[in-house]
Amino acid sequence: MDRESRGKRACGSRICIRDDFYTGSQDVKQDLKRAYTAFEAAAKKGHAASQYNVGIMLMNGQGTKQDLPAAAGWFRKAADQGHALAQFNMGIFYASGKGVEKILRPHSSGS
Image (tube, rainbow, N blue to C red):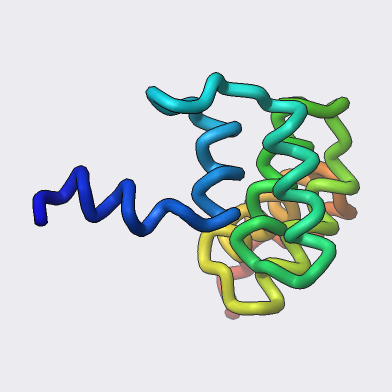
């Protein structure tokens, strides 16, 4: 079986349908509002990748109104489950104070 066939066969799941709404595909027109709704439903059930995606969409205002504190909250939920990109984004948020209280401290020389 070629790679494309494997991908179509494996993508019969709800996760792939959410992804298709987000990115668009040859079978599904991109619909960011539907993608946000679908990702949010899965995120509320504890799906880490969906929590991360909801955070991205809230951060960028894709399919929903931009809301940085809410984005940080979803990134935190995904990060707590070990989602590496969510952990990275939380670091960026904390360093910049974007959506959260800034906690980056200047480096001291330790003398």
